[in-house]
Amino acid sequence: MKKAFKEIIKWIVRGAIYIWCKIYYRAEIIGLENIPKDEPLIFCGNHRNYLDPPLIVATAKRDIKFLAKEELYKNKFLAALGWVFEAIPVKRDEKDISAIKTSLKDLKEGKCIALFPEGTRNGLEKGEKVKDGVAFFAVRSGAKVLPCGIKGGVKGNRKVTIKYGKPLDYSEYKGKKDKETLEKITKEIMDNIIELSK
Image 1 (cartoon, one colour):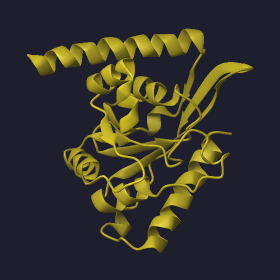
Image 2 (cartoon, one colour):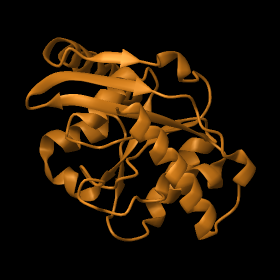
Image 3 (tube, one colour):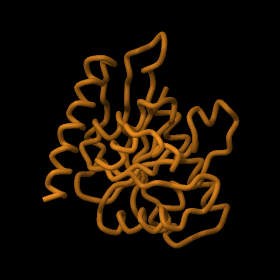
Image 4 (cartoon, one colour):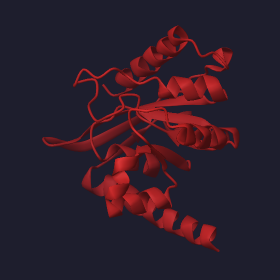
C-alpha cells in the first residue's frame, strides 16, 4: 500500500514539475528518442542550478534515482522530494560505501541512477576537478551512460533547453579500476555533456 501511494505521489509531482518547466521556463526537450526504455542507465549532465535535477526527473520518461549530497536532507522540502523519488544520499568528500552499494544494486536490477560529474553547481567554471563517479559506476556495472546538456533557465535567459545525447557504452572496460581508464572515460563523458549544452 505504501509503495502504491508513493507511486501515485511520484506521478503527480513529476507531472507538476513537467508542467511548471513547460509553462514557466518554456522548456524545450530534445533527444528523447535516444533514451532506452528498458535497460539500466546512468544519467549525467552539466550542473548549473537547483532546476537541473527536477528537470531531468520530469522529462526523461524513466524512473531515476539521483545521488544527492546528504546536506540537502536538512531542507524539509528537498527531503520530501528525495523520499518521493528515492534519492540516494551521499556523504561528500569521502567514499560512501552505502551509496555505492545501493547505486550498483539499482543498476543491476535494471534501474536508472543520475549524478553530476562536476560534483557541485558550476564546477567547471569554479575550476573544480571533474569527479569520476559516472565512469566508476559505468565500468563496475556495465550500464550505459546517458549524457545530457542543459542551457538557459537563468536570469536573462529563462527559456531552458535540455538535450539528451546517445547512450555511451563502456562495457569493454567492465571491471577495470585503474585511474587512467576512469579519467579517459570521464573526459569523453564531459566532452559529450559540454557539446550537448552548447
